[in-house]
Length: 287
Image 1 (cartoon, one colour):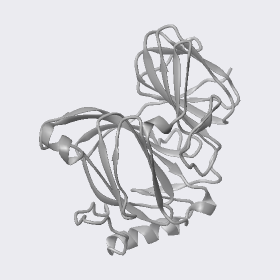
Image 2 (spheres, helix red, strand yellow):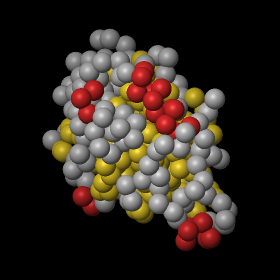
Image 3 (cartoon, one colour):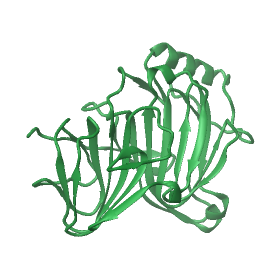
Image 4 (cartoon, helix red, strand yellow):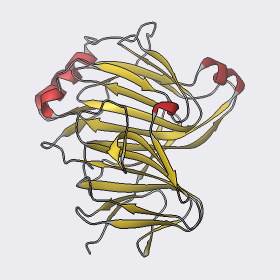
């Protein structure tokens, strides 16, 4: 059996929020369509403090925000203004260009709050990079689940484990939330060629080896594994079909053609970009 590839995340700080970021990495640029993986670590905010990610742009990708705890207000240049609750999927497809804002809702900002969750980016297929931007919100209750023998699976996006999410992915995708009780086991099938596990909390084994906490463990293609919980544990699995070609990433822009990124940088710097209604502050282009 081939060995797994374990990717240790970089510790980052995004506008005051502690982040672990295993993807992208020099070891691996993508897993299926996933080109970016941020674990927003558990954070407590005092009153009048919280998330405040000012207006910023994207091209060539879909962003997916999924919370375990807390709330986020999503606003974008399409006019969307959506409260995102734990277990919901906030899905924004940038296409040729979109801007958005993410912040703690006003009610929680005044009272103080907590936040814990994941944000991932999925590269668009090459023939979809220039599409019109779009946004959709999928409430927790709309996501399919299965529960058996101490294992609960929720399909966040894509398909797998005989479940299919309503999130409108544009390429074969696997993104599932896995919760196992002590002693439970889960067979990890080979239905998607590229797969990686990320243990959020608890202790688990992958076959006979410990599954490291907060590392992205890339599974060899075509090989089945068994995930076993040593105690209650929580993980996610991501994956899908390989990308249809290499991607470049520069700041918040993803594209197969460097000229698309150069154009996006020029447009954002020149303020030739769709704006979020009611928003004037923005994150400037890094040098």
